[in-house]
Image (cartoon, rainbow, N blue to C red; front, side):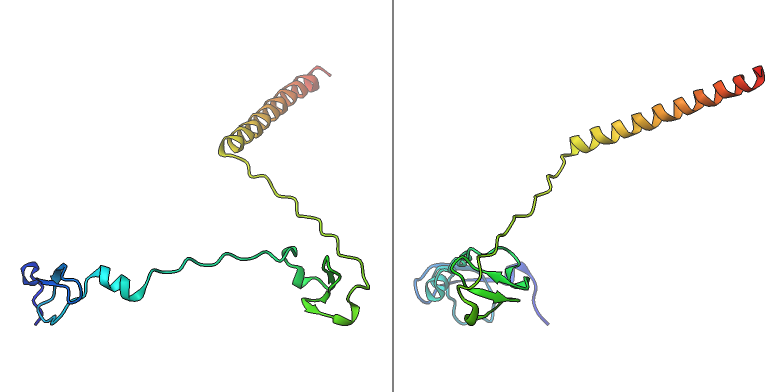
Length: 137
């Protein structure tokens, strides 16, 4: 049976620096504070950022890609025999699709509804006009 009462926790001092550590279990024999733990483990290193190779995205999927220095690749694998024999591959960047704002979407939707309503009204007018035109003949 574990005692889950909040009052059952103790306060002890750190073995290394003597700082007071709260909320220590009853069965704990010694304690190391968070500062001493960080000193032992060390600060976490920041992840290294990717270094750009200068090649376009997806170059390794191209059947044939020639780098600026003349290195030839077939499906991402280098072919040293063909180095310098072919001109560098010209890469055209993809056109980025401009995302519409919510306001632009609402304005476009309103214009579509207005056009549909106008078309329906015109259709009704034409129907009425044709009906009157048929009775006159």
